[in-house]
Length: 430
Ligand code: UD1
Image (cartoon, rainbow, N blue to C red; front, top):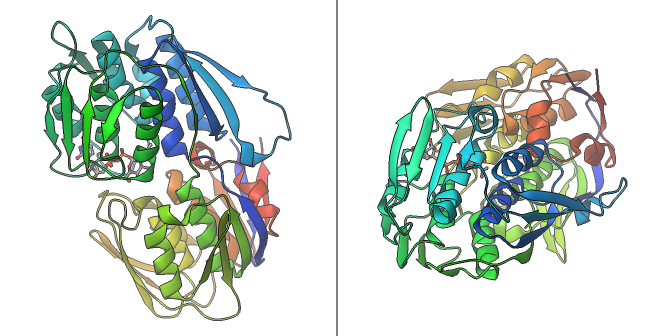
């Protein structure tokens, strides 16, 4: 099992090219189930989750090729995927596949839309809370789906003639439930209204791609989506938007270590709440053509308070990295996690490095220490792993991050990108 070794104490300086967003690439790949034509996706990040979803789609009948794959290609270009789901020959998404990655549960909506039936295992994914799927199922029921749960599987069917437009009002904002219902509604008969929809930029990206495929969607990037169902969708070419979580992670790494890094391709409009908070803490952020410049000199950062919220609020996916950024900041910073109930698993690992963090319920208080020391730590989930890397970058001595496969699910070549900016970081493969 791969590990990452970091020798802390180096500043970061240079340019980091931001990859395509994992959380957009996955639902975009799933959208290819909606058409028998070819969907071409550009700027797809080379990540373990993308490969896993490719295997799941192949199982449904999607023919999936990677164009011009060659070593040494610029990361800014990402990969170009051609996905063709001419015939769906299997509407079952088995446990062995879905349990490895939660987003694969989102095949349910498009399979119902196109094939009128689906059998999809209840999902797995990061261990950051119970993460139910009740909102997905209630939403699909509003479109006429008949749903039963049997032996850990969701067995779903539509009435004769397929899904019917309806009104879905989510009681709380869910990214996944919005994707699943949007991907179902585009092929439903008549109009669907989704109220209290998630407005994360990745949902807007998927909606824009669906419009290129022939879908009729109003209200993109808002909390109310109005969809007029169409009978069929066509192929399209779409470029995956840049990964705001990757960009935010590197911005926080620079804030922690000091230095000056240009985040090439990062879109500041997708990261406003995080950038505002970093400025409040004393980091210099400059929005430039084609990216974001993050600078921190010798000046000390100030403690700040943060609460995670759905977009445009501060993203839960940057909470762990933010905590790592504040570990050496004099005074007490506070983090309140309002999205997931069990997303503090990095706390115990950061404390192994000498961090002073006290946690009570959904709130953690970080009191800055004079120094952190390198330690053996364990990655527990995808974003938590990134916080351990940031901790390692500022700790004295060597840090070994175990269970790097979590990191590989969502960060493309993290050790290469950081070492190009001066970090002493290497992958230890066994
Ligand atoms: C997605 C993202 C993940 C991010 C999260 C919140 C992807 C692949 N994953 O996850 O990186 O951390 O959004 O921004 O895009 N909930 C229910 N019932 C449901 C569905 C969700 O109660 O049916 C709850 C969850 O337990 C959680 C909250 O709603 O407390 C938000 O979850 P959701 O937005 O659905 O997260 P994911 O789509 O799983």
